[in-house]
Image 1 (cartoon, rainbow, N blue to C red):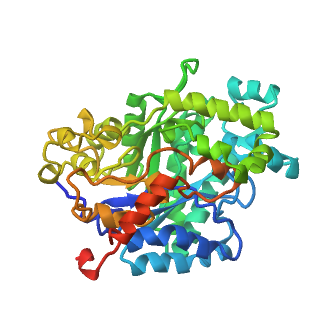
Image 2 (cartoon, one colour):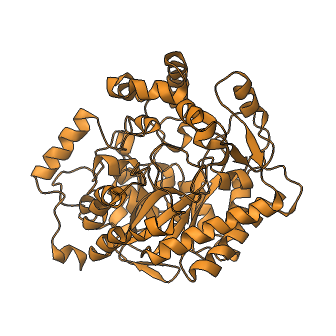
Image 3 (spheres, rainbow, N blue to C red):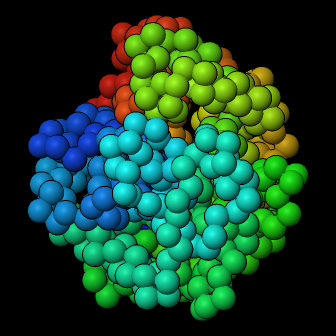
Length: 469
């Protein structure tokens, strides 16, 4: 069975190891300093040894489709060409970089961000079909502004072509591959989901859109590898009667394998943008932080509306408590049915968990029992006696807390302790909520930052040329 340090090939691109930084919101914007801002966010992961770095969601159109402020769009070829300094820096460290392409559809700023709506009153969301009734209800209650334009068949083809054009720009700038944001309630998930997709043309089969997007990328960007995130809407609320089940998600993955996708990332999500994708604690510190209060009011429309969003956030934190490697069972089922690599992320927090998920019995030892350690400990699904769940393992929020995290995970004996090599991230989610205001995704939790400082002083994040051999 493979070890974390073993290489992995995705669509002809060889990764030096099987650890990756999952896509996150960098909030680098589209100004002249975007490349430098992205490098500050992404280069430390490659410098510390990550085999693959995913750049977070990049909108495929010059306007609209952004799910958060300060996103870095990929529709302007001249702008994207300037990001070659970023890709070059990643390559200098021996790493690979893929960019995640996205369009928010009904999750876009024009639906939920009050200040953005006031500044862009004529901008409408793109929709796969008529918006479902919960979104229409929230519109009537004043919490959303759902003024969607349902895509015609020709417009669906135009949108797919935009993904292809952005992929071509990425290839010209030196990116090694593409990641499609097929989950987290973006428009790609909306095509797959029966909750959103009630079309009566060829795209009533949501996989058809993915097939067309793959063809567009191949035609415009050649052999550039494409990774896609695939949702199972297992976390949908009980009132949602039509959703992507686990069996459906496995079947979708089989079809995407046949369609020529080079790697798959199966994830358990909801039909809504909620904490099912960032399980953990209620981010009380972030909601109380005076630095962001005015930004919350601008985003949600008023102080009392921001308070209601915070209350909903608190309720979700109860429903979606932290769960170790919460996508492991789904990923394992997919891996048994497809011929391409399966990537796993979500709730992986120790080196022991990584080894168990990869099936590295020698390193994992007793599997779940060896990794048992409370919040970051094991789970029966992670045991070394189980079939491997994936071919590569990624983390997201822990990189906000430790930008150079791979140095510790790839040298698991470096910390000198008796317990499992665990991330310092506490899954408090105080890094994510301020991003609604356009703030950077960084760790702001004092105890976590103090521990990172201790590890830095102990040399835990340092690497030598020998570490890459």
